[in-house]
Image (cartoon, rainbow, N blue to C red):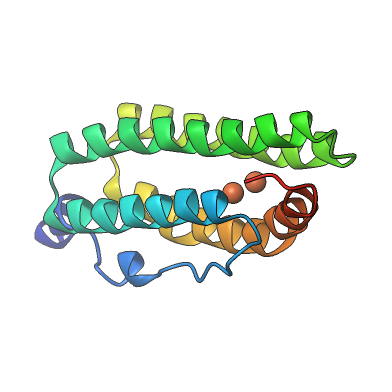
Length: 150
Ligand SMILES: [Fe+2]
Ligand SMILES: [Fe+2]
């Protein structure tokens, strides 16, 4: 029993990290590129979690946070420039995820629990990203593209 629980702490179940979000293309190529980069980071995170590489996870979490910030800030800058009316709603969704990621990182720093980390990234976050890109990003990109933004 002790042996089993020890194993589950050092190795995560690889089924958790199998999930990949399916992201529809939106009307702005620059947004699609950023989304593809985020998927590539998720791919690297999956492999790092599967390998149980804690230092690698720390580094990737920092990289992922930076990328998420640039992703969200880039969309927010365009929405402001184009005076996109539902900007506050879209921004609020980004802010909710910023807060969640920062909580997830604090919890990781405290508990070093790779299962919990994997469950958030390959469960909650993948769910959120699929819905967000298919709804808010989709509508936003169509609005921006119709105004000649790139
Ligand atoms: Fe996006
Ligand atoms: Fe967005």
